[in-house]
Length: 101
Picture 1: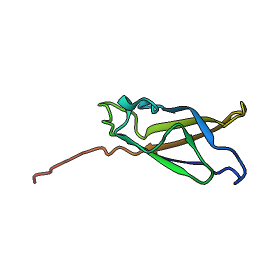
Picture 2 (picture 1 turned 180 degrees about the horizontal axis):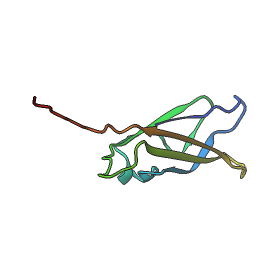
Picture 3 (picture 1 turned 60 degrees about the horizontal axis):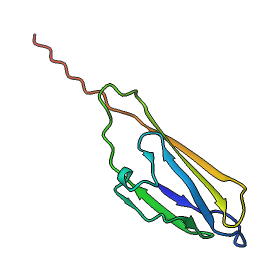
């Protein structure tokens, strides 16, 4: 996942309040990701990346949805600047048949 500060160039850094993933939980907790370049804030036009592995559980819905929510505020201000992104993965359904005549 990539998070980018798309604010105008005169906007203060955006401070992370919360980064949550519907499958992995709190992505500010190092126990929930493999690697992260996200610190506590993002300057204008800066990006950071969070990566983690995840095993889809047996019997999961198909397609398998996932949503991430990023909650921030401009440094020195209390107004919320939040974003959400969703995606889903189509799981394959293995099948085989044989006919003998």
